[in-house]
Length: 261
Image (cartoon, rainbow, N blue to C red; front, side):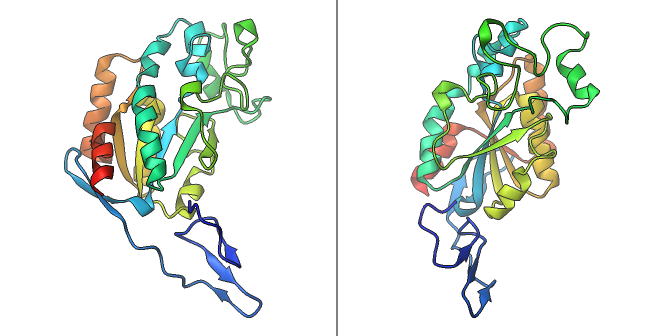
């Protein structure tokens, strides 16, 4: 999104796509900003992406997945594995913000009444019908599992979103299913998306594949993603992204590219 004040009569939040209205006319033919190309080393090919038309989507870097006392920790999972992206993202996100690239946080955040959650989704987190499932309380009063606006669903403290970042709640493995993410990206004029977060082989991969099907250029930032799944799951994800769904790079190469852009 543009950080400057909207022009008089501007309709729309993005410099990429807006109208200007006056009492006499509405201008739908405004020129788009000039591209700001950035050359990025990646596989299977190097890329030139437009910083004016790119965004980073960070998926599920929240307490229930990445913090001691969260849901994954409570059920005996390896929450430490999901913390691996924190430090790379702490270095990368300020540089992307400084370059005007929108930061979009896509977090699992359910309605308290779970009214839009069918049985198959509830089964995903409570497969044997017992234990602590979606919307149920964590020990020690930490809130309900993955409930919107709870501690459990909040982004980890180390990566707390800043004013101007965009937040989107999701309710499925894909961040695009039944959410406003695609509309937001299109209003921003986004054509290329950098993907980060957890889990690499689950919510990150399936959000990326949906973005690919919708026509976006997709770049998986390998060191900004993690999973508690076995190593072969990450290997398969990276292979499939390179083969079918986009490109793979990392935070160091993006930071170098930003310096040279």
